[in-house]
Amino acid sequence: MNRCSQCNTFVSFEQAEPEDSGSDVDIAGAYGSDGESFNDIQITGSVRLVLQCANCNEELAESDIEMNCEETFEHEVGCEIDPDSTEDVTSQDVEYTATDGSEGKGRYRKQFYGAEGSVSVSCGLCEATMDFNFSELVQASHFSPI
Ligand SMILES: [Zn+2]
Ligand SMILES: [Zn+2]
Image (cartoon, rainbow, N blue to C red; front, side):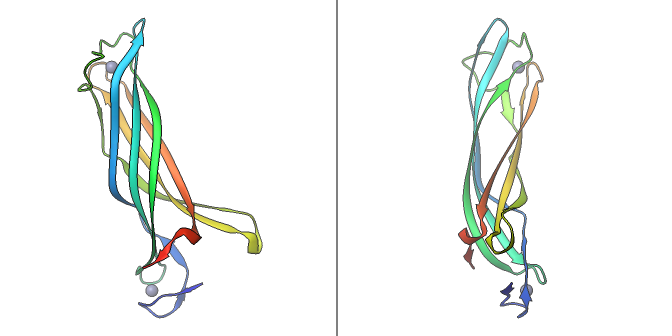
């Protein structure tokens, strides 16, 4: 249990929604043969995790994490994507949701908090759409008090 400086009671932590402090979806030029085309996708994100008071929502601790994910985007067979152009493959904004987990039992139990990111990438030519998901967890001890 932790004491909240705002409502002055012993409270448990509750994870707030992760804050996106800068995400980037880098889509490389297309490659492939025999009508099959692919693009390599690199997703990077800086995310601020916040633990708040379960009673009054005061922010009590924070941790900044870096996320990194490499994926491959597959076009529909026969897509006439131009290998030298990345204009036809576009991504939506990365969305983050809170996630957590634990390991072990009793006093050896470790609590983890983290973020799960998802982003949708699509091709304007063949209309293929793929959703990419990635996540990162950090131990509760990595959070600093605010
Ligand atoms: Zn409080
Ligand atoms: Zn395509």
